[in-house]
Length: 427
Image 1 (tube, rainbow, N blue to C red):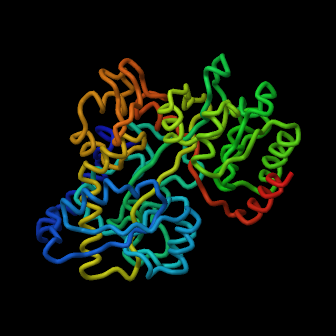
Image 2: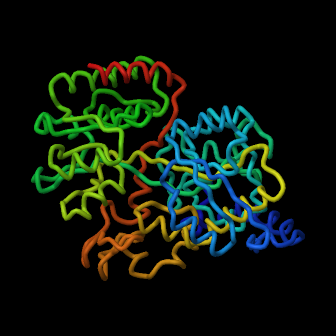
């Protein structure tokens, strides 16, 4: 019998039993739900990660609330993984993608996160803990968080199959990616990933040139074209990699792609200029095009979305005041202000209830319930994102996240895949 949560991010029976045990233990400890204010004993946390969560506003707010100074170390996704594996003493907190955990956890360089020290651990969305949205299972091809979120213990180098009280990462932000389109230049409905290689858009299409992610988008296209059905798009065989890359090379040689993009600004400029009308895209890039007054849609597609997720991890060497401060910061991050800040940027937060409490009802209705905006929707920096009456692309949280097809992943054949991808780029 399938256990169903009572609400998104809520409890089911198994989580309730575990949570009750954890709460009993917690009651015997002191001050875990009341983060210390560090103003009298200043502490700086070196925060390693990509730029997604590294905002000056978040750093300023946690400094104001807890007295913790955040020192950002912004690097690329691949560099985050490399630093954790080779230089684990150069950061106090890491914000890393779940897809990287299969390379990182076996090194023993991350400390299992004790959920008894995380106030909202029982309220983390079931998308992470169980792979469900509103009680329904979503696609789990690739590195779905539910496969790698639990560890057997604090010093574990392997993953656990069920809740243990130790998480590999505490989720920070996640989203579901799809194609971005220029509706004013296309002039008809777009419903499938197959459209990326439609000759109708010859010379006006683009794909993300980050191998581990671009290959997933290409696989969604190959399946949509009916050329192949993958057992797991996030862990292809060599034959499947060959088929996927050969499809891209054939399209590139026929002139399908205007460009291959690697940088956020590249994707924005290609769409804003109209040089490209359909491409792999990230949600904030669509927003950036729209803020220029240019029509751009983050297009829901019948085959579903490619999802990604990131979370906070701790170095195995963390201890003392730094370790306490890191847990305080993570508890603060999940308490709502940061979640609301991220939701207003078009991302999703780990604990929906606390984010909701920090948003206006009309904001929650637009961003999370898929309802028409009751008034203009503004970004955290004050830019107009949607006018009154507009709705979010893809609809509600349940509609978007419930349509996940696969997750970003690092394949067993990653080295071979990157070599083949480079052949595509050079073709």
